Length: 545
Image (cartoon, rainbow, N blue to C red; front, top):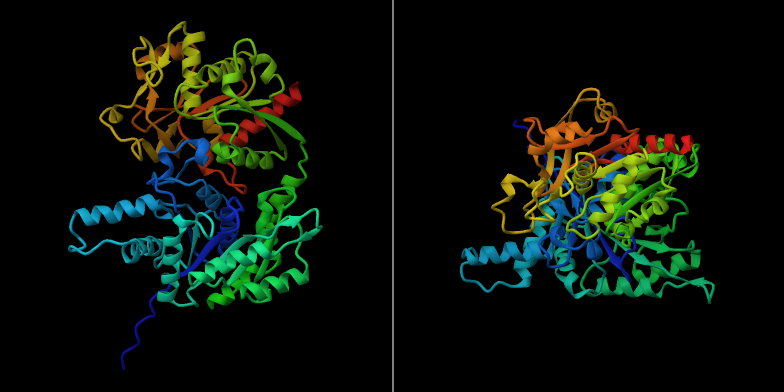
């Protein structure tokens, strides 16, 4: 008698949609759900589908879109993927972010190749089929639960193909294998002194009109809902009362959201709806981390972030979060001082930066604000203020040393001056034939060897690391001898020694700058070592003052 074949593994899917307004926090909610399910022992992956027509966010202005988040495998993606990784601890990939532009591009390329055999190419079924292929690409034998966030808001014209696609997907795999989670606004009207449920009702009605019945209603509100509110939402949105989940504004930090959802057994309810064992939830370390954030024993430390996009908080989202993580590790609260680089000059630097216990100079593109960043670095070097340079911040630290210490007054980057006689920073060799902007930089994870005895090696506790990159320009090796003589130490290089990855100044309490983006690998439970040691040095500077 032959044994029966093993049952095929079925990846379960959660689809998260948003209603009423944007910026409700779908990304943080999705990330919190992923964290809780992972802590119950499930293998989770995450994905965001964005309705805009850009192929990816790589060419979009930070003023429009916030930061571009880079994955280990070199994809330029939406900043929500940063939340996914920081909360869940699971690395995202190229399969974690698809845009309408990327979907349409793929379909049109197939049409040009004749792969549709002369058929009329339409939104349904061709675009929706491609969206479903993107969703399916997230699953597999090593994935128990795939979470897909749909960008935009219910009712947006551009979101309709994505909503139709997830309706089709659920119909194909069945209700036990796919759930709809709808995050909606339940506003508090101060004049009436009450919460209003009508916008949420209308949002759910929009979804019902295209065949999507939410299994869970997540209610974002300033004030807790009353039982009457919950009963009304359940009735008019066709959701069981126990599946109306409150997502009330948290008082201290976004890292409280998982505990708010866990207190309502949201993750357990999802598992029951999917027909999966609930398992035990263990989040005591997360709860302790939140308490460390709320009650910092070391008080405040002021960190100046001098950039060119500081008017948009999301432009430096991962940097801000990494500093918060480092603050938690040092039992300190980060007091941010965001400064526009254009405001910093030789005359204003001392006054603008005098209250900073540490200074961070982030990346960026173009020459606007470069002079102010160089003056910032000069101030930090001369006044022994801990400095952390990231990407362009490292390049400008090299230029500052070349100009003000090595005597190369006209030192520059060819990004800003193609005819510089002292191009301390130059276009990477393999970038010289590149003509397209999107997805063509040095992207993703690369190894780096650290110099024994350096501050960087001490921070990491090892001499071989990997970090994520996003740049076209690099340090020009012809200037290594001059800058070494001027006091720089090349503390990290590519394994072949050709690419400079980290510079330091041993004559300074903490002057470290890296060509990569360490902010993409920091989590609240595992702060990035360079951010951690930078904040520790800033605390020491504060106490010295």
